[in-house]
Image (cartoon, rainbow, N blue to C red; front, side, top):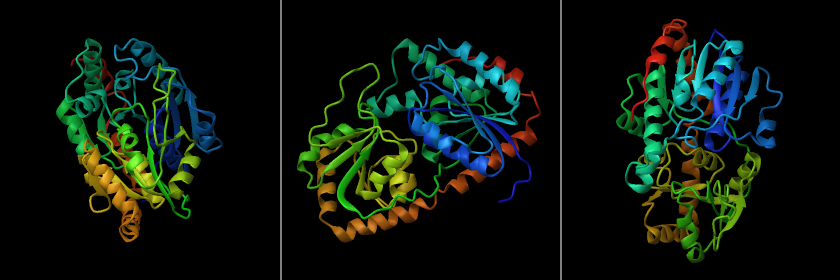
Length: 379
């Protein structure tokens, strides 16, 4: 796909989870195509290995801030400082389009068209994990800011149809939405497969449900290793992982190497708006055993085995069966790798570039700034 115009994109990200992989990968690809990208980090400073991934990429620059992530600051205590800081960055960047990977930052004084990408949210996380809305007043403020951000944006997108529908039902945004599937490039991490089951994710996150694997690991014939942060923020002690090996938080190349060796990826998540880790594992030829939730079904139906995320007995049986059934395992490995080709970085970058150009063409400079200033944050 050919795009004549070269764009200047201001994109926010954080360095905590999958949003970093998504944003840094997309920013590199956009820069490779000749666009200029300024990547602004919110929250904890990126690790040295994360920064090294982006070093010396022509057309890509970074601005690091210590602005609070909205899910860590539900009361919105850092909102005004964030808006002021981002407005200053925007004044010298003069972007053609602003690409936000969070919500409330859409309420800053942007003079360029604003795109908000819905990667996850606390309200949908809470419902999936605990079956209800969060009850504390501070989360009502967060919910109001999420809706206000969606309404202040000129467009918003989500990475799956299922999650787009979830966000629409929870927040009823007034702006136009779209679905743009996430994508990654060639991982180049394949290796001879070993009798190994891999899981990945924050060990303390109820959504990832890694604790289920810990409870069944002793009864599964193959070892289970789990990659991801072991310390919950604010806690000194790591979560116990009996009968599983904790690999800790790995640099992405190291994680891809482990995926290349693993024969099976197990993802028992109760909440996952997309799951870049699953896509990465699929590209390296892992057989996928996934929780039976709408987003995974949408992306991987016909290319994975699905198990109720709350059924320990079923997970133990499926993983045990798959370790002893080489033909089924190899078939699933092939199916996963073939399906992963649908979710290419090129297709993702094409879709975002088309959306950027549409925003630039149909949103006159400053036309939405006044509207954004008048959006109220309400639960």
